[in-house]
Length: 107
Image (cartoon, rainbow, N blue to C red; front, side, top):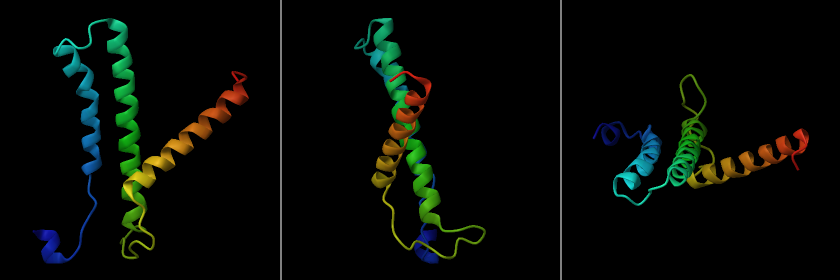
């Protein structure tokens, strides 16, 4: 109600909910869906990667759409959606990783 009264909205820290995805392997193990140690490790690795990826996209979304500090008064000139930030992170991470592998001689 405060945001309606002040006519000001804040994106907030709602993107931190993506960190809850790290508990999915524990739930799957509890339900006896994951039984072997390799499947549990793989599920943990995938859930950590996805939750960190979505959380980092939320941080970029918050910083890009909040405006410039210290007063954040200039607002948003071009709205950047959350899914655009996810795509931006996917492209950035894949190109940086590809460049790193090429420099280290892996590929």
